[in-house]
Structures are given as structure tokens and as C-alpha cells.
Length: 215
Image (cartoon, rainbow, N blue to C red; front, side, top):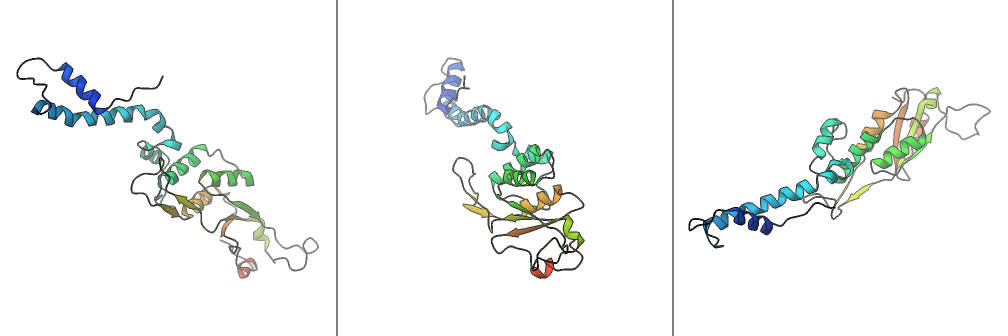
């Protein structure tokens, strides 16, 4: 059974009914007493609605009032990503951190990125080995055995969503700071992680052929 939602008028009627009877306790809507009760009733209505919303708000994926508590627990906003401009982005980052169980596979990283709101693929690299790679392949040093790349769209846009976004939020926002921050945090420490965006986001050829450092 769902919790009842009372209107301000319901609270006003209940308070009037609890008042003592007599000439100094008028029921006239124009009286000072009635106007004070009418002014306080919307507050009780808001409190009741917030209490009824508590179960929904307690879950990070749908949290609004308690979202700052979740963020504080998880060390958010992270300085490396900054504050998210959208409510959805904040919720996604909290959920991603809470549900992160660890891993080093491609499905793990793509699923983690999806939890953040990004659709990505992963590219792995290998050093050039004579007899194993064809002519024209990039000449990579041994460091490329520990190098991988996240491929993402040129822009991942988060649009304002009625019923989910809040008043004052931009109609659209974009940026990949959260993606890069979170994935660099959980990548294996001995690996080099690069990011490429859009169809032209491949690594620069001179960097691929760069003979040593990838740090």
C-alpha cells in the first residue's frame, strides 16, 4: 500500500479541527488564525511528499536529496573530473563507483564506461615483431605491449530530461572529463591508457612511431 499524499488543504482542515472552540478561535478564512494555518500548511505538504519519496531517494540511481551524502561517501566530486553539470551525470558516477567490483578485461571496462553514460570500445596494441606483422604495420616499441586505448564518440551529449533533470540544468551538456578521470583511476598501474574520440581520433602517427616513452 502506497503512503498517502496529503494536500495543503488537508493539513489546514486537520489543524482547524484540532483548535479549541470559542470566540478567540475563529474558523473564518479571513481571520489571522486561518491565514497563519494556510501559510504553514504547504510546508507540511512538502515534508510529507519528501518523506514518501525517501525510499526512492535512498537509491543512488534515483537519488536527489540524498545524492550529496552518496557523493561525500565516495569522495565525489573528484578533483580530476570536476563537478558534473547534470544530475544524471552525478547519479551515474555514484552508481559506477558503488557497483565497481574490479576487473581487467575489455568487457569490464566497456561496462564501467557504460555505467558512466559512455559507449566505448577498447583497442589493444602490440610491439612490432618481424615475421609476425605485415609490412606497413606501425613500428611500436616494447612499451606498446602495455598500451591500450579507449575509443569514444566525438561527443557524448546528455540532454535535459523532464522528470529526471532539475530546474536550472542546461538543456544539453557534454564532455569526457569524467570518463578519463574514472578510467585512469582504475586502469592497471603498469599500463598506458590513451583516449581517442570520433572517427579521426586515432593516435598521431608520430606518436605511434615514437621510439620510447608513452608516459
